[in-house]
Every structure is written in structure tokens, then in C-alpha cells.
Length: 369
Figure (cartoon, rainbow, N blue to C red):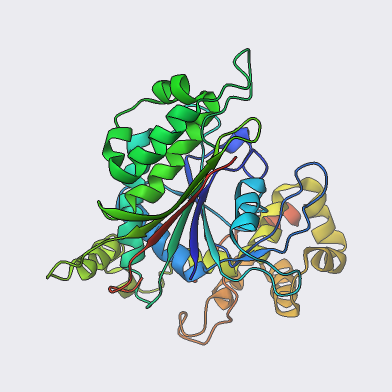
């Protein structure tokens, strides 16, 4: 059972110079980040790229302007709760895959409680419309009452923590009416993290069954665990097919255009290594090495033999003369290769010389920054 995992990065993978509101991982694996003392001794966690791509397409169709990431190492915002939630083995890794959804809650303005709840409702449509027959659990993280800066540092409010959890279970809509300032007054400025819990709650049915609840305050942050079971019902009409049609609307007909290949998330992931190599041609030193000693550069970038041959021909003949060979077999009408970068630029040489309808999401919350 894959986990859709809602968390916030602590400016490790996502720094303030490019800080997105809603950021979805679409990779097949996520490694452990170095947060200043070396990476923690935890194995990387596997992703489910197909499910991530479907969720991303669905959220965009529902007018959530998402950001997407690949090849990012993730910090304790994901791995600390995950290591307490699931068993893991150094050799075998984690028992399930993770779809990471990072919420930018550290640099204001941040999304409102209502916006996060609506994101959860859209997330439910995305999960339920996934064509494969799988179940999905939704995990949301974030510390309850706490403040870690200024003269109010160390503030906690266990009474409000208990009330928040109760309202999350029984009356989440009321929580969406509160402002971030009101959350800060009751729970401390950093308690804004709890809006991530509303993403999970929005993805569940109006009525849920709580099977576990716990709370403790070890030092700076109120920590709660809450497990909810979904009580959703299926309507007598096929709403999921309607939603899939809605998702496909914007690109409908593009497949009929000759010589046209939309740069999809699947192509982006498959071509990431080669595209990253080409992107670095904007760096003067990299361009010079590409001209003078390409083989050492290829080895440094970990390029495959096929990728190296394609780049070698590009150096000699010009990027545009080989780009069609980088499309999947059958797409260019003459059996192209299965490497799929789309970043290829004409000026590169000059600069250097592609949940089942019956399944329902379950919900988990794991609190703690």
C-alpha cells in the first residue's frame, strides 16, 4: 500500500530562493538528505512514479498550480515520522512506496487552512481515479503547538492541541475558517504546520472512524498520532470516468498532430540524467570540458554508453540532427531510441563549439516536526 506523504521540508531540498507552495515528487526513489551532520543511517524510500504522475495531472486539472520534483534528497520532515511509523531494514529498505507532497509552510505567504483542505478533496479525486486496483494510505505530518523563535519561543498549548485533534476528526470544516494568525495565537507561529493535517482530512469522507489517538509533549513540540478509517460511499453513477475525461481535456487532440511530442513527466524523468548534463552547458567551465575532454565529463555524469554516443554525434553534427533519435521507439515513425530528453537546444553546440474505482484512501496522521 503506497503512502501519499504530506510533509514540509526544512529548507534542505527546497531553499528560500525558489520556494513553492505545493510540490509533488514524481520520482521512483528518494534518498536521505544531509542536514549538516551527514545523512541519517536510513535507506532510501521507493516512489511510485506512475501514481505520482496521475496525481499531479489530476491536481493540475483541478486548478492547483503544482510544482514537481525529481532527484531531491529529503530531510527529517519525511524520514523522522516515517522511521517511527514503519519498520525498515538496511538491506531490504522500507515495506512500501511513498508519494511525497511537500507543503511550503515556512516562508510567508503560505496557503490557508481552507486551501489545504480543498487540496485534500482534490487529492481524493486523484487517488480514486487512478486506474490500477490499489489501496492508498494518506499520511500527514507536522508538529502541534510550538514556537521556536523570538521571545515567545517554547510556547505550547496542550488544551488547544486536544481541541484541534477533536475538531479535525469531527468538524474539520470549522478549522478551515480560522486564519493563520489565529492558529499562531492558539498554538505558536510554527504550529502553522498543522494546516498539512487538513490536506489529509480533506481527502477522506465527511464521516470517519478513529481507531487510534495519542498525544505527548516531550519538550518543544506537541506530538500527536491519529489513525482514521475512511467511511466513503460510491455513488450510483460513474463519476471517476467523468474525472478522467476532465483530466485529459487540455491535451485532447494533440496526439493527432504530426511531429508533436509533449514533454510529459514520464519523458522528463526518463531523460533527467542526460538533460541535466545538457543543462550544465550554461556553465562556461562545463562547456569548455565538453569541447576539450568529453569522455571524462561523460564518466563524471554517469552517462550510459548510448547517451555518450548520442552526445558525441551531437558535438560533431549539431544537436538538432540527433534529437529525434532520443524519442521512444515508434514515436518518430522510424524506431527511435528509448532515451527521452527534451531539453536539447540548438545553441548548445554553439556555446560549446516521454486508485481503482473501488479503492478508497485511508488516512493517517503523524504529528511532530
